[in-house]
Length: 405
Image (cartoon, rainbow, N blue to C red; front, side, top):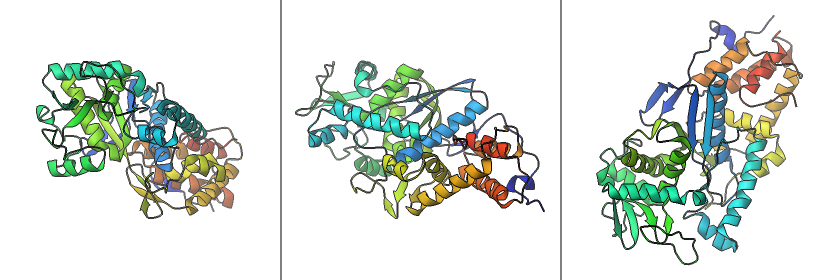
């Protein structure tokens, strides 16, 4: 008796011409209306520590989006920045007794190795903040001429009262934004600010910190202006898809919108797609708590393909907890898939492959993909299905998992 598989319960899968993803600004799942060439900007790492599982989950999200868009016939230009100067990397470099750029180089090398091992699409461009200072200065100069800035005690701030739709991305109240600003690098209680939500565009450098000459005095940029400058230089004034972790919605992405649209008068990004955060065995995963699960450590324990598979069991928009036993389970699932695939040539136009496509188009429903792949492999293993092995190879390949090596 042939086992009934998940995709056999519905009519024959058809591949729509678009993906549907949750747009943070609109607070709903929307059809992506995209040209053949898609411009995507994803906030990259601040390279002062190793790549952890939260990074892997975030960048896997956009890798899967890119792969599906390519499968639909689009070309995707991915720009992922490197924040190699900010309030995090400078103290870490001092603590280690090395130059901040040396620290950045070391961690970027490790990050690149991890991303390559996880088989994520390489970025088309990886601009570095320290190489984009001129663009930041020019943006601040334009903001200044437009009446969007003020300077107090040598610090140049963006005045949020000059951008009337501030908060349109996060949909938070002023009180909620103020609380998050204090938690995520802002200084709402600083008396030098006119408004608790105003944010730094340019600031004097501290002792031993790098500095650049500017019309606002020698110093260094604030965090938010960096991404506006790098994205505009690489992709123009309006991006198609802007991504990053959910903790960047406010303040980082909200501030990016305010300063960018104040300069251009155009939408900064057509779509905003954010990934959930990862906790570790019941506790928020963070550098300060020292409970990070590093990708470089995890891929010594299990195949990197198993890491991808494990992360796909969780929906990209959901915060989730990682438990150590997930690694062993994912490795077992990968071995099951490899056995079921049997090294066959891919069969791209199959019910299983189209089921995967439909699930990816449905707000990147990777738990459904994960379940379909495991069910298909188990049916072959149990000898209760005549499923073509090549369809498993093709379906996994759509998700960046090569079962033939």
